[in-house]
Image (cartoon, rainbow, N blue to C red):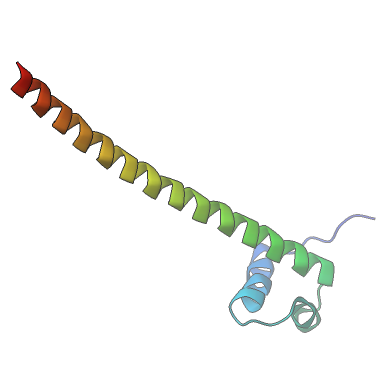
Length: 85
């Protein structure tokens, strides 16, 4: 049996109802007349994607902090070497 095709607008609305409106997946499935399993899958994918985006943002912030510290240490090392000469 071939899986049903659902338009992305419907998927987005189902995810929004679960994540923003705080409805259960069962309620959303019944309201939109779609498969409960499909709603669970879409919400899981959305949350996994959100977690990855959050992780990438944290890594970028960490990288920026480390680069700033590196630059400060390089300036300090340069000044110390200039004084030693």
